Image 1 (cartoon, rainbow, N blue to C red):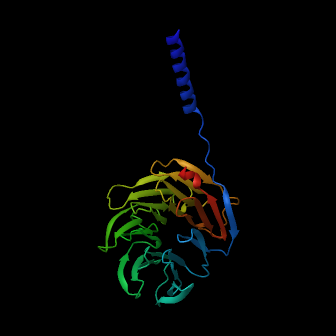
Image 2: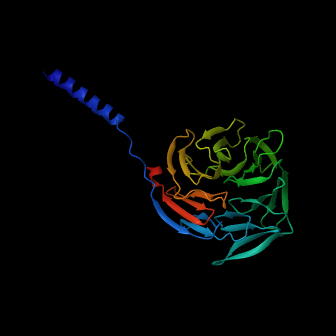
Image 3: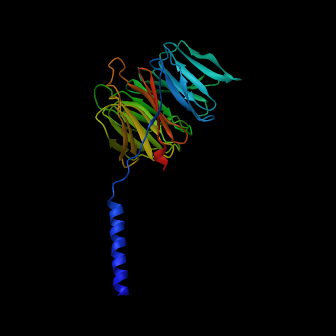
Length: 312
């Protein structure tokens, strides 16, 4: 009798375990915690020292780049680049470069020492931020759409428009130390680039709606993640490196796991895309802990969602 009771108990426990394993997973919740409207084209960055998203008034700047610590901001205009640096409690704005071609993409190293600019003619230029001296110039086959330094400053990623004529790679990764290309990939226009916090992974968002994820220092083919037919306009890695946020031309923001590409969530737009603002979403970014995700919409809307569920 005792053996029979024990056998029945084991069967019941097994059935309970099976039932739990078959139970649907509770959907993750990412509530909107803040929304406000600014001027069209305004951007933001995350400031680690006080854990805040900070608004950047873009005004007429073609491109903006920020080194959050030590809070150095660079702005490109039709014929010049200006830089804002901390002076006491204020930011002092000075002209770094004058009488130069319009730079439609900018990137700055995390330490604020190097600045990269890219123009419509395919030229990529690196300058010393302290002196404004040119340190390197590169030439691509199409207009420069995006630039991104790795957090450790060792790599510069360049996103290029799809060249006319014969096929050519549209994402180039340069070793800043040797001033030479390390590898290239992609055959669709790359308007968005993002590095993981440990500088190991580079994500490139393409106009065919896919994302290519490549390992820094490796010549292996990147992994292609296909999630949407809508062009990618902005990207950011979660600080853990396990998730990626992508903004698309249809005004959706997608969250998914890396490298499995399993979709976690889709932030649906309240309104359809506005043809007057073709980039639609200018920037997406997680905060330092990955507890919040912010998006800047080209028409001036700014939204922040609670993404702390990703860490649970």
